[in-house]
Image (tube, rainbow, N blue to C red; front, side, top):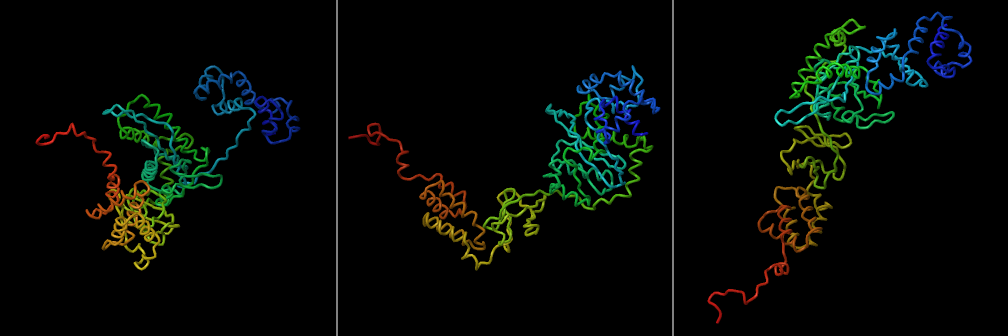
Length: 485
């Protein structure tokens, strides 16, 4: 009987037996068997009413207005003044069938949400304008929202960008506002959370992964273009868009703090309102799931940046225009640097091989002498012997300068290898006599650095060049002391 009622209900909507059979997943012969029966035979007053009102609606007009941005709810309220309409949900269902009658209705299964299990986070994509009264510049603020799946309790704040530091700080603020940590965190497939998303594998951003490890929460990014994977945060964003954005659309904000304080006041009132159908407010439901969550960590989260680089022959890696030593056995290999505001960690294949304090300024060397090879290996070091050979080919002054740099007291020979290689590299751009001149000047003035040698080589002029640059004076125009006899 239920199948017969469903066939009669879909008959005026889908119009064809084959379409109805495909939609219900049954044989067309079964549909044909009950196709000509009337709806009254099954005592369906609601269906017959639906047929009457839906035939009077100009669905083409409804679709055209919807494309202009008019909401279905507004159109429903307009038609409700003219016709006797069923519930809003039925109106929406008929609108979708008329919009694309050939498309099968998508079946959605309700997922039971477990208290304290999931927190969904996302950006809305909408922006609020902020006026800088000092300069008159118009800035835009992004809306971040985090919502719990069970209680629908949500937290929101505005930030100027969606970059990684702001995203992680917003996630931290959301967890601290809630006061506890859920088991899972569902994020969008944005670059600050996911660096690469494949069909079956997801590669998390390393900083976001560090954040989840610190708070002992499991990252579970949503699938690409699948908003139903995080329905509660999407719904929370819609609530803020319809209420907060609309209410304050004509207000001029002069600071991000002012905007966030107003949003905080709105959230406080919203979380204490009773939710239709549940009989409790979001705050009351939050109190029920808080005991199911974990504790916040006792230490603050520290943001790290990552970079891959190659170890130079002088046993150093370069990071942020400074140099940090690593053990000699890793020369020529690719390592990964993990850096915070204070510390530098160097890893090779997940093994920590060096730790340094962040160096101040630029071009600063931080070196552990134990990272250099033993002195007995210096004579067989390829890079040192190769540098000595190249300096000898350039000239005696350059050879003397290189040997002096390698033999500086209290310094390991490899400490100046990068400087020596830079000086020898000048041979690509400058002539041999220019480099010899710069090396001689550096030895005489005891300025044994790359920049000084380069400056001397750049300004070097040979005798022929100097002669051509001198002015050509004629004797008859020269004024000699004592006159001419």
